[in-house]
Length: 617
Image (cartoon, rainbow, N blue to C red):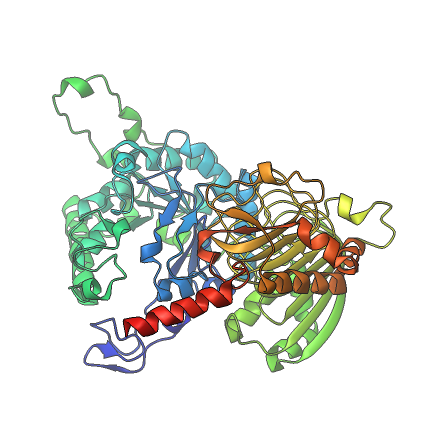
């Protein structure tokens, strides 16, 4: 919530009129997290969200349920939550099991690059689950330019995790931390990253054990909630939390007993335990024992089922980092190096347009080594004006072949045009603006028959428009929230996990269309009658475009598309509209069935609802 990103100045007796539901406040408090999380669903991840972070965490998985996505039931999606997540109240919000822009360590490196691009001052952390083989993965994460690696053990997790996963999935943080620390030492990478660990931490003793095994930082989750009143009823997903910690119901939220001071007191006692125990051991600071496995000794418990387990490697001394933990933690944020956005921002006309909200038009060459182009420009705008406050206009044209994440995190007022082609992740996380991709004039091929952008475009978009004259790769518009797009064909899994927005496809698509789609609308041109078996009908239903508002929406987007791209196919559809309209399918999830664009009898239904309301009165 953007209102949380500024310090409070109106606190009286512990309450603020800005955030009236919070208590125990003081003037100067900021009711936001210093660490912002980027999970697979990308809910709420906007340019302003990212630029207001001191640290950005990529949550690969959770310790209590590795390999699983998440689902926020519709009854928990209140008007406030829907606004924050750019969705509709009551719509179930599904997070995919994987990040759809991470299928290799190189993909992870690209996402880290993207986040460093929009917010060069924020450290980027990567959250991994403690499992066998984590050391190799952690080495790759370090080389991918992450600033922090977080090891998450299986003992943590809130009541939103399935009980079967809590009991049987993941591994102890001790095993994951030891393997990670030792592997990084052996590969000369330990000084590049801060090691953080969490998963069931409760006391100062846990901190000391983790420090001796090599951790620099320590995370507390569930126990911090307990300190503020959580009773671990493990019914977070039902919206019925008895003490209001994890409920959107106002009558339950009123029961919440916690105040910030309770949490502060808990951590003070943890810190005091750490200090006292260090003194007993003869050390002055925590830095002195990090990586000192020689201070540990195994606890021998006579159990038949554990007598053949050898955990000696937990106590192996792989060596100590060349730098102290304080030096590692105080390193500067890892840099992306010279990027094209710096050239753009160095242009006096561009900087003047951003500073004084003017209009400017510029053209730049682009090459496939130029990645996440416009991301840093968007970050500068978002930091100054927020996601929607910029009244100027940047018209930027690029010519050539763009690298990955072209046009990521665009904000309103940014109109970006590419004459050429682009790699994966075009329009990732865009919150507004316009993104147009067209081929060069002398291509030698028919634009609608060739792919011109890569995979996973428009991932997690919360606004803006994308017009692509040509085909796109797989997973187009995955987890799209409010973006609008028109393309001439896609690969597999188009519109996967969409929760809002509108997508128009003027050509063929791959299989598994609209899987997990709970919001938004999609229009698919089916000239050869092959679309029906390609659509995943578990949630959405297929219907012809019968509603007048839907026909207007479809035609309006195609008209804008033709104007921006000069598409011959789009022009032909408009010129023969009456013949082409019956060939379009409309994909409608339950949340959109009563919308004017999907309901042919919308006016009659609306009149019936008004009559029912008046009768009830």
